[in-house]
Figure 1 (tube, rainbow, N blue to C red):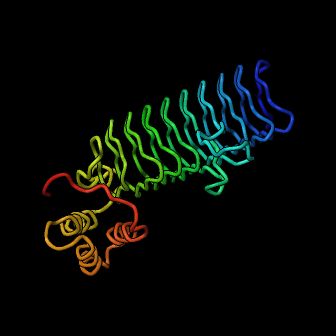
Figure 2 (cartoon, rainbow, N blue to C red):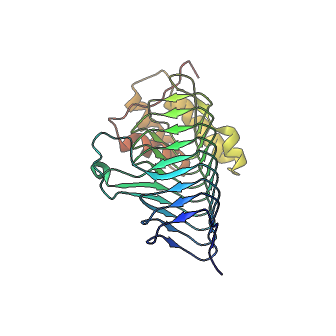
Length: 265
């Protein structure tokens, strides 16, 4: 299987293109770029820096992958952007390399969809099966778990953590951590409940969803301190792995603020 590079494309001598890679008109591939098998890079795409793209991806027109981070401390170090397999990267998407201050790698998992003009900032860690809708933005150092949906024009503030299977509504400004399975909304974003539609679409069974709903009510009730409710929830629902995932997420970084409900649940 050969590599198909359009005559108007520019591929630097040091770039490594695996079998079946296609590079479209006027695209530019830098010397430190590695592209996996059967990945298609369409027209007017710039892939620069120390960037690795996995297999069977599609990168559409005018995207820029591997550009320098928007970070005043960046001094041209050879940091990385690593993108997994089977990602669909649409028009005008930007993903930046990492910084040495945070380990030097921006990492994107497998099977994601990054819609037009969405952005993945430096040092982000993005899981598998993540969707960033149109113009969704991740600031630097953001962690996004698997199966997260970030809706159009939503922005996640730097250093925020967003747990697995959660949903961020359109136009939301997320400045605090989002629990796994949560649904947040608003400016600034608050916890609206659980991502029940997403859980059903991902085939979570009725018993699991029921346990999550009961645990949510206990965790965000008005009685007692939040720490007491965390401990009570862990004790009551310790046999439920999804509930304990929420508890472990909260306990993992007590210094990070959480998105909380805006009103009584």
